[in-house]
Image (tube, rainbow, N blue to C red; front, side):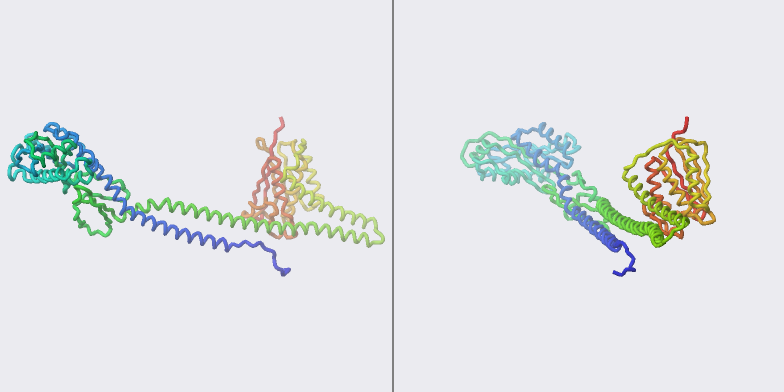
Length: 558
């Protein structure tokens, strides 16, 4: 390795930049795919969820077809005009899509009947009643005995069709078995567009009697009563249940052959046929593209928020890595500077001590002046080494809370003046003064307080130009605090460095700090002040000076 190559900390910022680019691209791709998938999912729902709309819409029809229509079987042919009217009324009140009901009162025997017969068994219409919404009472009965031509033609055809199916069932039925669902639909139901006709199912004994009457030569039988009802339905009166309003903007019932004349390309539509008696009609469902787009956006937002949250977390991780690299880099530099500065701080007095020692050893005769001179040098340099070691040791002890505060009631004026006298002997060109406002005694640890004073006075001298080496120490009290202000006329501290000066091993690079400094003086002061239950702050202006303010707990004298 080249000895002149500066030692540096590898930060790998490029890796962090690459990571940020990668997660940013991944976010964009994920948002794009998520939006497209959400849009596709909604399109699929638009096509498939119409079944749910259909099921909910025809639920009343299914209930009517499966429960209400077969109810007349329980009457076993004994419906009369009053009971039929009551039954029709319950239908009209519950099922709005039923418009008209025809009640056929039927009789069956082996008599010579003029309507419909097979072999010896015949079916004859005894009477027919019509029930209709908002129908006047005199319009209820539409037939009684004999079928009028051209007046009852459609109803007559419906009756004849069901009578034929009934006789065919009697002819082919197996009375030893229960009727199957297929036979039930084929022989007792007639489902045509907008109409359902149902004939009540005879009991097993009746069916056996009908079969005997049909194939055996028997005397004229009694008249067996049977009931048949025709329900005319209006599909447009079905109540549409839009169970997916987020998908379908408009829903209507239209003929099966209906095609929208709206040529707007912004309109999306789908349809599904209605079942049973409504098979000639369909549900027509439509929405605008903007309507579905709004739904896509609504559903996409939580997904986008989740993706953005993940992105923010990853970005935060990248930032923490970046900050950690910066901190590590700064700590590396501080430690590197600390080792260099500490080496210099130790090397200078050691070198001086070694030179003085060599001079003493090599001199054959030492005069009193030389002995005094070398003794002073050895003593001063030893004090420097001892002071540096004590500061480092004290710093470590304070950080580890391994020392205890030993309070004494000190006389502030004497304490401060003693320190000032010592520094003015050490630095004759240093002008130090102090102001004490209405405070005489202060209970504190004099060693710790002296260390704070030492560091701040030393810094005031070190960072002041030769013509402005002045320091004012002002001591006052505020409520339960004692305030120490150290006001100098030094070089000042840049605003950008204010937040760093109390950090351990941190050194401001300037012309006054080139000869070497360990960088723990102000950090040591802050630890001491915190340890003593106070706080330290600073105000400074470049080329004007600085003011360090220390606040410590204080109990005023009574």
